[in-house]
Image 1 (spheres, rainbow, N blue to C red):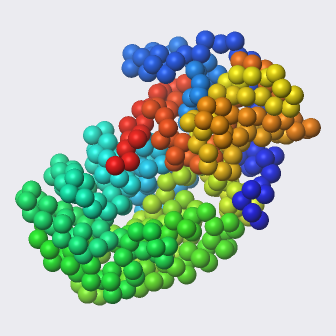
Image 2: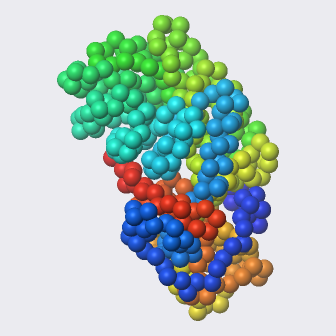
Image 3: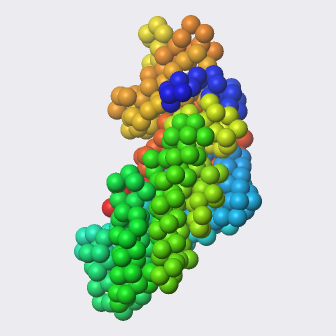
Length: 413
């Protein structure tokens, strides 16, 4: 099954989408007004999500909490920990919700993300991307100086020596993991002796404390079909396990063996020695993930709910068979498959234009839209979409319960 072969009707059935819409001639509260309401403790004003100025990024609290609870329960049942990747939500509030459910820490993709998380109360952070420039290395060591729970990844001997020099200069001991390449040749050092030799060097260098390894198989996460995904994951991770066992046999500290993700969360526990799973997208889900198929349904990945949506307003309805909305690439990205209109069938949504989304009706469209009416779309790829917004609205039922800052938005350095 190709990723794009999943029908929209099948998608909506699987995600439990409700056909909920209200005619809009409504106030349209701005982002600034909503922040002020929340800061002043005035969310009792009972603002509906349909009253938000658009485009607006929303997360359904009931669905988010169900996703968090299912992951925590699965990890507990499978005897493995979670170390969620904050690059998905970039939101300290959600990171804390994950920690409250037993996660051993969070991952970040960039040191700036790690800084933002620490500044907002999250203090157990594994930065999975190597820092290679003097500026970034210095920032990482500054963060370690303030945050004893900060761990930095490295994938080369030269980089390890630079980390050592920076740590010694600051008079600190920095925890370090070795990033091992699962075979996708993106980052990481090769399996076996290269990884072992790097780990031994880190263990010997002054100012560094070797604490284990990470091996994240990004390519496996979106493999279509559960059995195919499982076979690829376990085959690739055999060499990772062998490498980890080599490190253990040599007397190195092997408290961390981190890897896996949302697409393989119920497979990763079969990787011998893996201590924690770097799940990310499960909190929100998206059109990409829903189409890969799950263990229970090979067509639809329905393990987690699609909790993240964008509210958008129709701007033009003058042309037959289509309408234009205010959520284009700058609000939705141009990732594919395209966003899904929640609660409706027989229509498609494209966000290829910078400022505008295009709604195209098919003959069996469940409805049409008028200028000023609002609709809700399920995002194509949650990570880059979140990075486009300063805040998200936490929704319970139809009402806005909270306004959450996306504190690590734009933290790509």
